[in-house]
Amino acid sequence: MPELPEVETICRGLDRLLVGRVIAAVQVDWAKSFALDAEQLQSQVIGSQVQSLDRRAKVLIINLANPSLTTRYSLLFHLKMTGQLVLVKAGGERFAGGHPTESMAAGLPDRSTRVTFTFDNGDRLFFNDQRKFGWIQLVETDQVENHQLIARLGPEPLSPDFTAEHLASRVKRHPKAPIKAVILDQSTVAGVGNIYADESLHLARIHPARPGGSLKPFEIKRLHGAIRDIMTLGITYGGTSFTNYVNALGKKGDYLSRARVFRRQGQPCTALLSRGQVCGAIIEKMRVAGRGTHYCPRCQPWPKATKSKL
Image (cartoon, rainbow, N blue to C red; front, side):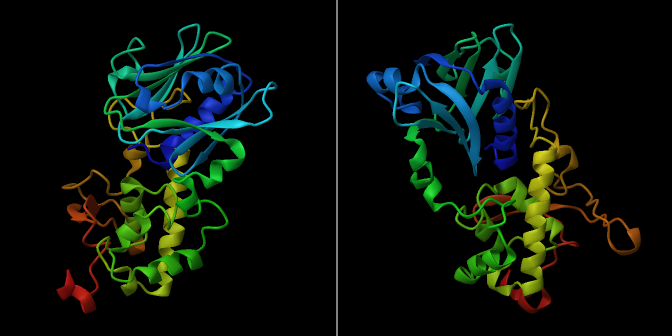
């Protein structure tokens, strides 16, 4: 699933390319992907101008304005497991982001295309989704924060609201839950998924299966800083690249080339220890909270006092 850094990269790229454009037509090929009746589509979407793009957790938000309407609307996009957005410009140049498949470079529309937006300059934005779990919804702009998904989200990991104290309060609510499960809970911190949870826990030197209640205050503070650092790196490097991922800036997401543990099971840990020594321990994989989880047994040891509980 595209995670926060991937969606942020898509948001930044499309913001540069779509703001000011007017939606001239919308083709819905799979009704469940964009469940909006024809009358609403015609009156509330077609003819509207793109004002700005935002992101909340893993949800992309395109804010619209229409001089003929007194109410402003926003389009919410959730890519889920296999969704992708591909902007094909009238001249043939394309910008894409989301789940990496051949559709990013193939002729469009194709069998995975669910919705197509055509703009006044001839550019087309394709919402592709092989497994049909992703969705687009139209919401009144001033009600976006009350949307059933967004309303339950915790603070953004890079916002001032995400503090070590907030993280500690969430850990306190679930003292027996594995710490990885706590930070994957979107009400704890918005947008942190499996990849960046593993990476953050490794940077913080905390075993992902440890009960949250076993963490000391200094460890929670260290984890808070690690989450912010890892998410910053993910955004800086454009997200992850599993195969042919290309983000909306026209570049490959390459965070995985710098990954600490994710998808590196069986390889030596490259973390630096004291005095500049490289760890070198073999990265292992286990299941925590039902998710494949990567960790270094040397950098992230199980505390001796709770070893029998593993």
